[in-house]
Length: 81
Ligand code: F3S
Image 1: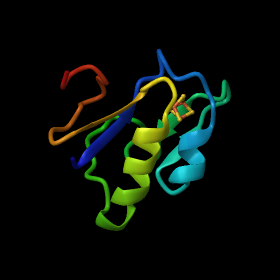
Image 2: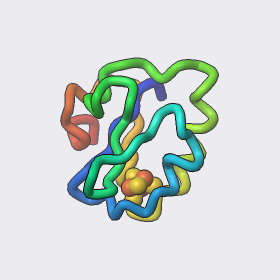
Image 3: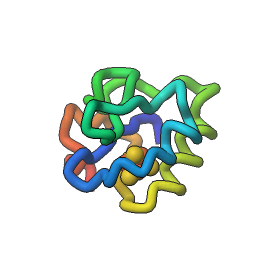
Image 4: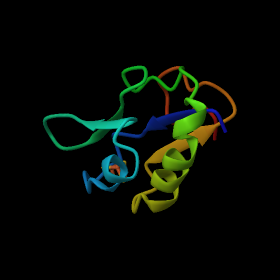
């Protein structure tokens, strides 16, 4: 899966993703996460050397707010479900 986005509607700002993949996930003022690659649009391919970290974050998110897909999200976390 090459693309990642955070669903900010369900993110509970737990902070785990930024620990697992600090080069990929940052936080907004309210503590919710965002993908740094593309301003949380889910349109930039995850760099190969970050993929394992992103999968760790994906699997560890307690609210399943990290979405991954083979297809770009174009800003909509639910677009590939
Ligand atoms: Fe939010 Fe999940 Fe990260 S709850 S802060 S997207 S681990």
